[in-house]
Amino acid sequence: MTDLELARSVTHKHIFEVAQALGIPSEDLIPFGRYKAKIAPSFAERVKSRPLGRYILVTAINPTPLGEGKTTTSVGLSMGLCRLGHQAAVTLRQPSLGPVFGIKGGGTGGGRAQVWPMEDINLHFTGDAHAVSASHNLLSAFVDNHLFHGNALNVDPKEIRWPRTLGVSDRALRDILLGEETGRRPGKFVITEASEIMAVLALATDHADLRQRLGRILVGLTEGGKMVRAEKFGCAGSMAVLLKDALLPNLVQTLEGTPAFVHAGPFGNIAHGNCSIVSDQLALRCADYVVTEAGFGSDLGAEKFFNIKCRMSGLRPDVGVVVATLRALKLHGGGGTAKSGTALHPGLTGPNQAALEKGFANLQQHIANVRSHGVPVVVAVNAFKDDSPAELNWVCERALGAGAAAAAVSTHWSDGGKGAEDLARAVVKVAAQGAQFKHLYDVTWPIKKKIETIATTIYGAAGVSYSPQAEKDMELATGLGFDQLPICMAKTPLSLSHDPALKGRPSGFTVPIQELRILAGAGFLTALCSGIQLMPGLPKKPAGERIDMDPRSGEIVGLA
Image (cartoon, rainbow, N blue to C red; front, side, top):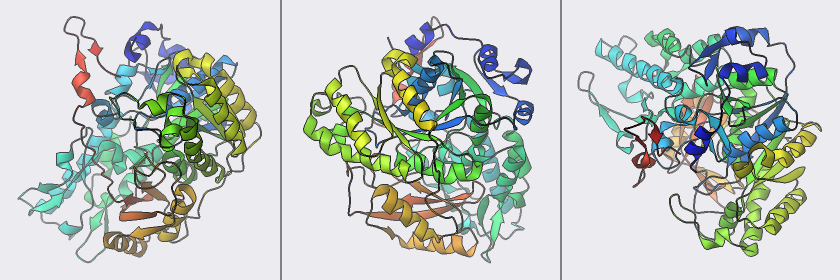
């Protein structure tokens, strides 16, 4: 049975019933059919004085190209907590159309650890991503219109830093040449999930904050080198109007009816990789335990969760769950390759203690990364059907020796919430002990010191190098007063380093920074490692080739 067929086989609750479990009355819902709804701002205002629940971050080791199951673990853990009698909710990012039709496929979990309605969530959902694209491109259009009508702001066309955006992967749009009317000049597209507007949507705490952030966006420089922000083009208000409803959290459910907030979708490798602050804030006022997922490994989404999202939200995590699989640990230990759409190398699926022991160093680093922020760690070993029980137990025992406060094997993919009960018990116990949360760096440090602290502490690098363009970008950011913003690193998720070929726990490498982007509205600086693209390309065999509509029933087929 496929994930889609399994999801359709379950009897799902009406969204009003899901909301009632959190104490959200139907009058505070904006329903989109029977199974999804947005939550009105009036409810968030009424519950803002309630005490916060426990805040659980789910991250992972560096994954194989097939992923480690962070989403399934997040969903399974929330269901396991409910099975133990706790009021729990899960908060996730919205999937991107790029991966849905590209390499990765959908992002709603799998097996018996899914969120529903998976077809809607993976595709248009409630239209939030489209609103982000529209808001972003409205500013692009206003900028070029301003140039066409005389350029009263004296904007230097060569210093315009605002791209255009598109919601699907299209490598042909990475570099473009813009129109004749305002003089030929280079431009580019980024995928919607890398748009600064997506980051703004995810980090804004309310509509007033959203509007202010949009106005602060740095579009470019004048001929005299002065900043030109979005507010100057007269469309920041219209941009906010396009995002008015998109800022409202989306409520759906897991296959076991556990409340799930799916909202905003910044990528974990090239953006800050976390769902919205408003959904976490609301969930924490309504549930005893809130499980949230950060994109990719602790070197990416979790580091940004700790140092960007938590810095802006003021929320503090109680425990970090680090997901690992035997196949990924063996991959990092030299056990073979893993590619999407192909069979796993035998060295990853069968007993291979030598590769497992060598690859365990990768998990050690990720445990250390979470603990470096004062957050206790629970290791979740995501088990597959043919995994060796002896190897699974070995990883759990070694994890405790590496500094984890607890470790548990989880079979949520095949068994749903029941398979995550041991993990849920471990999380409850560790969360009750409390955390001593701290940020990795002080934002007042110089830009290079912040970047180098991330690279040496989180990646294990020997140092950092900077291209001439990056040096120029850092000088500009400092001169404009943006040097005291946190850092969003953009690098490969497949290695602790910048190089996807360096597996395990590499050392002695130098992280190359190619450029630095100023995201003044979002409130951070993005440091791009060499080779990183903000507009992905499609693979030779895109997932979209498998997706179709049954002409007889009208149902979607092939979506995974």
